[in-house]
Length: 130
Image 1: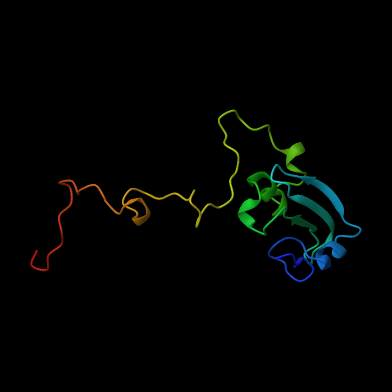
Image 2: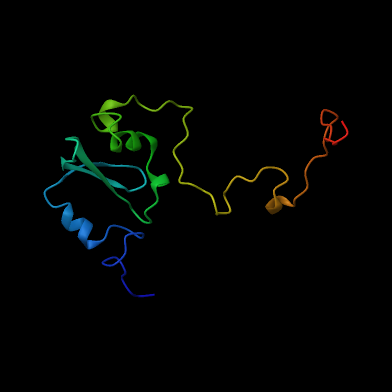
């Protein structure tokens, strides 16, 4: 597929219309996934408008929690200046893994063979006579 669908689609990155709409807006930062964040103008409630331009597929789970809080006006300044440094035990944010080989599958899931551990003695099946 050598066709560049970017001018016509929104799901595989910012379209040309989005990029034209960002003219005059301020780039405020980026994250470790390559997403770029912009601010500028005001919405109907008078709050500053904020955008994310995804690096790759447009998937909201690819926005890290700190930038999510900035996008949704939970913090006023960009995360690098307003949030404390990450702790040693914190793991980096991951995109949603549902539908991939990396998705969580509990014991007994069909993808793991469908075998569940036998029930223990703490379960009693319901019967209508009981």
